Image (cartoon, rainbow, N blue to C red):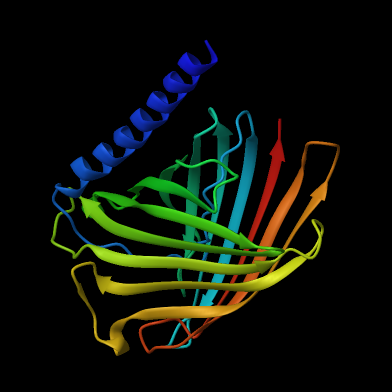
Amino acid sequence: MAFLMSKIEKNMKNQRIWVVLTLLWVTSGLTCSQAFADPNDYVVTPKVERGEREIDFKSGNQKNRDGNMTSANSLGLGYGVNDYWFTEVYAKYMHEANQSPTFDAWEWENKFQLTPNQSPVIVGVLLEIEKPKDTTEGYELTYGPLLQTEWGKLQGNLNLLIQRNLAASSYMPTEFHYQGQLKYKSSRQFQWGLQALGNMGTYNHWSSEQFQEHKIGPALFGKIMTNESDGFKWNAAWLKGYTNATPTSTLRLQIEYEFY
C-alpha cells in the first residue's frame, strides 16, 4: 500500500509540472507587446505553504533620470491553496510626477512550487496576469522560473522572467527581466543582504548595455511574530541605477501579514 501511495503522489507531482509547463507554452504563442517595471517590484520566492493567508502591502519610490519622482503602491490578498499553489490578487496604484495618485491595474499572481523544501535547489514557476486601467495596453503577462538555494545561513534567489502584453492596441516587444537577492539569515527578526532587479530588453535579442535596466543595492529583512504561527514579514531595499535607462535610485518596501 505504501508503495502504491508513493507512485500515486509521484504521478500527481509530474502532472502538476506538466500542467504548469503546458500553460506557459500556450501563452507564449500569443500576440505580444511590452511591459515596464514598477518602483515597488519585489523579488518573488518559490516556497508555498498550505493554508497560509496573507495581506500584502508593497510601496516604492524612484528618482528618474530627469529628476522627477515616480511612486507606486499595491495592496494584495493571498492564499496558499495547497502544498504547491499560492494565489494572490492585487490592486495597484501609481503616482507620476505632477499628477495625482491614480488606480493603475488589477493583478493576479500565481506561484507554483515544483520541488520540496528539502531540495538542494527549490524550483517554482511564476504566472502573473495584470489588467491595466489603460485598455490600450491589453493584458500584461509575466512568467518564468523561480530558483532558491541555501549555503548555511546564506540564502540565494534568482528569477528569470518573460514579460509581455496580450491584445494591446500597438506592438511592444516581449522582454526578459531578472530578479535576484542574497540574504544572510542571522536571526528571524533581522536579516540583511542585497537585491537586484533588471531588464535586458527583448527576450531573443538583448538591448545594448546603455538601454538595459540594472539596479542593485542593500536590503534588510525580518519577521515579527504576533503568536506561534502568525506575524508581520517585511523587507526593504535601496537600489542604485547603473545605466541611463534605469532610474537613478529606487527605495522599496514590502510588508506582509501572514496568518492561518
